[in-house]
Figure (spheres, rainbow, N blue to C red):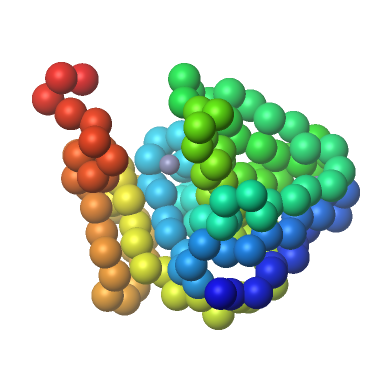
Length: 142
Ligand SMILES: [Zn+2]
Ligand SMILES: [Zn+2]
């Protein structure tokens, strides 16, 4: 198992600690992540039950199934969380931590990415439709 990671927001008012589910960074290019972060949301999934945070965490309900947490003082994005009480899923902003050395292994919503930049390297790239199908959402019915 990978060891615990410790990080903080830009101003330092919020500190976080977690054990990563895998030593991997994932990127989301959906329009909500783009507006939230200014580019793409680069995140590390927390192993269930391991995320701890101290400080002025503010939560925003960004959809019917998810919340986004940010620092109440400086506004730094902290994590994306699924609100279903049966699920413990936190995608934590990779930028809170010093360089973990983790590689980018997956990009999702690549068809929503602005054309002017791209992440280099060989890794999994999924369109919105491919991603939704992978989590069991039937796009044809949307
Ligand atoms: Zn802060
Ligand atoms: Zn997203």
